[in-house]
Image (cartoon, rainbow, N blue to C red; front, side):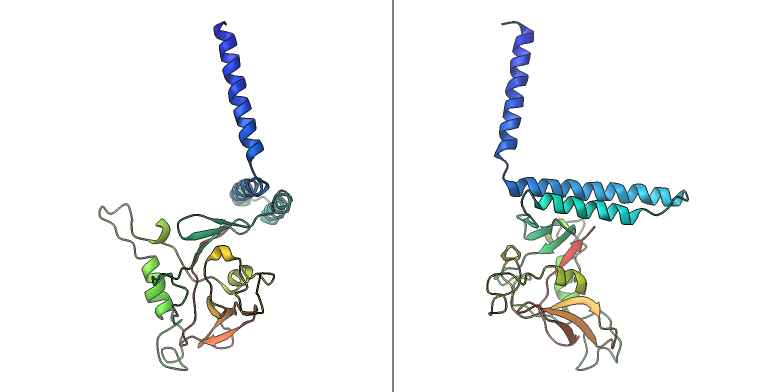
Length: 245
């Protein structure tokens, strides 16, 4: 066998292996890969658009979002798929680019049974009617997740899942992970995909203040999807989030 024929045979073997690997992909994996690529394409499109806007060209960001939405719909025809468990206590939403905290029942800061206040002070006011985010949801909970340290002034360690930008979700983000079709929803079980870990069928704080009065903030009730306002001095449940497209 000549050297050329050996190389051809080797290439054919590699090609066959690659095709075999692709054939072994599940529909969900194909969907996930497609959505990850769509996220990258969206970021590229938005970056190019920002450069063009600086040069005086029309803003085409809406077109970028339209293409992304179409790509998500096309990907779901292969799967469908929405969430990915990252294996480090977090869950990624492929449709929004958000990374969510996965709750536990191990007694840690991530435990589903922990409740936190939005702001300090006494009922019904928060610091004499203002609304600083100084309750345990921010000081204790997010403080623990974002409490990184550095020994060299450059690298940071100690933050949850190696990220130091965790926050409370907006009311829109929190509503987006409601799953009113989840098993047991409206019958006592939480209305959320089980990939998020144990979840209370109760109030979860959003980081969004009530426009009608700073003593209140919005929440989502994961028992039935109700959205309403609670006093910030009350203790409600929390789930941290970061990122986004």
